[in-house]
Amino acid sequence: MHVHIEVDDHGHNALPSPLVEAASKYFKTSGPRPDLNAIADMYRERKMAAVVFTVDASSHLGHPPNSSEEIARGAAENNDVLIPFGSVDPHHGTKAISRAVRLAEDYGVRGFKFHPSVQNFDPSDTTFYPLYEALQTLNLPVIFHTGQTGIGSGLPGGFGIKLGLSNPILLDPVAADFPQLQIIMAHPSVPWQEEALAVATHKKNVWIDLSGWSPKYFPESLVRQANSLLQDKVLFGSDFPLITPDRWMKDFALLDLHDEVRHKILKSNAIRLLGL
Image 1 (cartoon, one colour):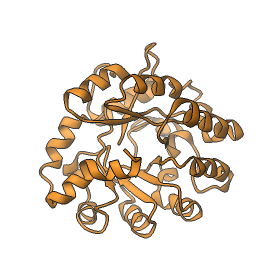
Image 2 (cartoon, helix red, strand yellow):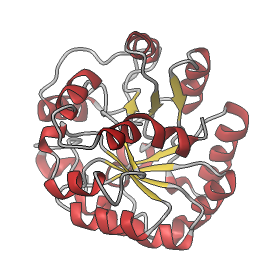
Image 3 (spheres, helix red, strand yellow):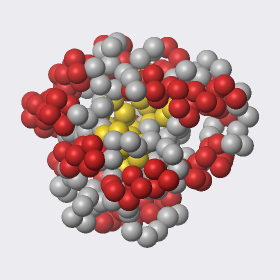
């Protein structure tokens, strides 16, 4: 449910180099980031599928993003394993809305990705409600980064990235005001895990993906709820290339989960959400 295309076919990186280096240090990974076709080959070998996307934070970072259109085209050529999501910069207003519609209708993206901290926007601000209205009309799910982020970690001022914008409680009014919009809160939402669980439990249209952390570090409350109340609303994600699906699956196998819940998390919940 959560794979980043960090390098495009022309070698352009989705983030400025200081952020790439900081994320590599934070996640203890190194080496070149794979392009879309390499990711497709890797997932194909593992008989897995992957939702792929980039993040358009051009107005905040002053850095040109990777192209969601190119990602969608590449995913179409690898549609046995790749499911494209688009990304638009919320600060672009009506242009973001028209681009989102074009990505859905002309390029076949199956959802959208937002990172409030990196894109520097408060998702609960009603300024962005026209965008959510358009996405709800398109009947496509949206992934919002929540919680701590490795992007900017350890840099002076965190490279200007504000963690509080990714508090999952900010998604509660969005879920309330757009009840047909399927909202995926990405990652264990540390340090706001309880807020995330409260929103997901209360709002039928809110889901959680488990990417960005090795399962051995999951908060106990998250594992408990995933194994019970939220078992139909939790989704497998790795955050590749920063965490490999191999590492994630190895640690996931050690969690104390019911077998039927494990299958829901790894496959059937995503099939239902994405209409596959």
